[in-house]
Amino acid sequence: MNFLPIDPTRLDAAIVDLDGTMVDTLGDFAEALNRMLVDLALPAIGAQRIEAMVGKGSEHLLRSVLAHVLASPGRPADADQVEALYPAAWDRYQAHYLAINGQCAQVYPGVLQGLQALQAAGLRLACLTNKPTAFALPLLKAKGLGSFFSVVFGGDAFERKKPDPLPLLKTCEALGTAPARTLMVGDSSNDAQAARAAGCPVVLVTYGYNHGQPVRAVDADGFVDSLKDLLSH
Image (cartoon, rainbow, N blue to C red; front, side, top):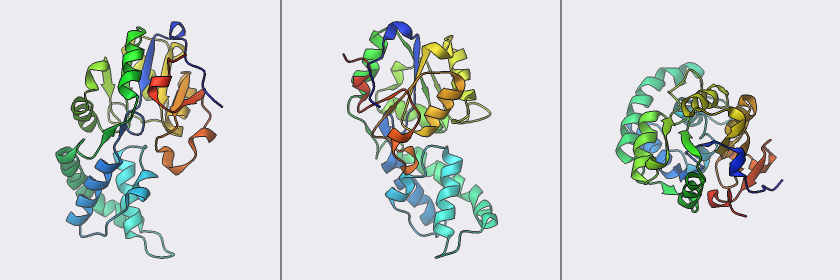
């Protein structure tokens, strides 16, 4: 399914995901995670493995990484061992991520033009990510994207994360818009499932992470190769 450019007269706002949608942060994840693993005297993990784990929040990412590096051939990691290491892993990961946040990340081509077009069309913009708010805000600022958004909500802003619809519904409340007139723009099944459940139209970019699965297999209203294509005719 291809995407027909959106009609901004049918929308009041857009909610935009961060990792894999606006910014390629895989390099940041790999650097911070591997620094953490060194601190814990654990083996390194490759960026390709990490890519399939991104998108469900830092807590899920850390547990997935620990489970991967603690597993042995033919035998999964012990869940109790993962949980025993988790507090120290989170402490070291948070310190390393905040120290390097944005240094190994790049804004995807077309993102700036896409946000400018959405703003020029009169849409209110929000950034909604499963990334912790303390990570998201400085990243947006460092990449020159923060000024586009009326509100920014991280994965710790609400009781539940995407793919639960709650964060989208709460973001619509903050924007003062109805879900049916609020476009969700993301890169993964998390974004699409949350949008479907919340009653938001949803468009996915084709270049993101999506847990290592083909993004065009996801139930969405359409797909774009660049954010600048959202309003192009």
